[in-house]
Image (cartoon, rainbow, N blue to C red; front, side, top):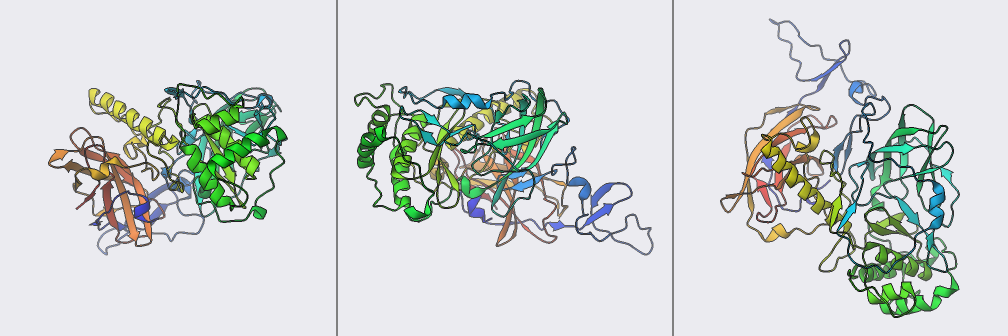
Length: 543
């Protein structure tokens, strides 16, 4: 992955001179050690070197405590690890809603005021805030109630492997099983695949999906269980360019209620769309139109048709935008869905190959949630559609909430003598602010450049072991407090690995540990330490 896709700044390379030594596996003791095995004639051999065997190297560290999940996974958002199935899950969030409740559908409303605080629970690693996929609808009734066209369920197969271009997630979900009755659970996105499923206690559980790709859990018992999942999904589903295809290449959209025809014609004229245009142009114009909506204390009225009132007034928050987009898309012939959870709503649009997530904005001002600073946030591909001035995307909400939570945690840690905000030994010190969001604006670009200085770093670095990183950040002679410092290992011009992120304290100092992934090739590599900056400090790089 190119560095430019990781850091929103130019950089120069600082030579690390890292020599990654070959692995030595002590099979008899069950211990994996990395180092250089050197036998000198006058000294006894302390460790004997064994050639790695395919499928056997470091096997003892490849699975978690359950023996069924990988111990760690490298993703574009950073290295993630599964939750420990042996620990007690959070009792405050249990999924128990049954399939039957979905039959009531989604009803649009006229309350277009922006919500100030929304409660939210994120069971995934990387965190998906606020895009946990909880409810999906793909059909519209005469009265504009949204429903699922095909409610029958089909099994979600378990197994297989991640493919090139996939994102990976771990899920940690407590479910109140009701025997064979399906219980709704969240998923990460359209077309997600289940690689592994571990239940505690060890009971029979299967996952199912309906025609709109809502996920459900079934069991053979009535009890509360903890489900830990490993999930793969193509990254194109989160943000990618809509292809230039013809109408005949799209899946056929069922005929829409005739009662909607007059209202749709007015909305299509206002947006400037029609079947004379290619689907990509229609989708682009629709995204621009519905992203230009604004919250309002005055509910839209005047047409006697809630779809028409919302679409022509351009008033509304996330759910109003997604609703009006869906009705418009289905009427013009673009397969689409409305997706929502307890905090946000967005749409999915189908092309000739996959469903793609599109955020139309209208997010709440704040979230009420456990920010899970010990988990890295998900880093989607760059948004392919432009945002208007005053953007209010879901990604902005997540970044703002995480930054505020980190600041509070660091203040509390300072009062407690500088302890790790997320607890001793947690990974929050590696990624306290998470990976950079390619879709978020960077107001720091106009600020004075940040000067980063590195302290001493070990010359010999070993795969799979932590490396201590420390340094300082300042701008215009003043310390840069609470900014993110990204650590990237440059293997060659075409291969770069993001190792994690650190955060500076009030004095502009940063310190923490990053781990060299086990699959990094042995040799000399470059270290890049850079920051996208913050409110008072511009982007910068190590020298």
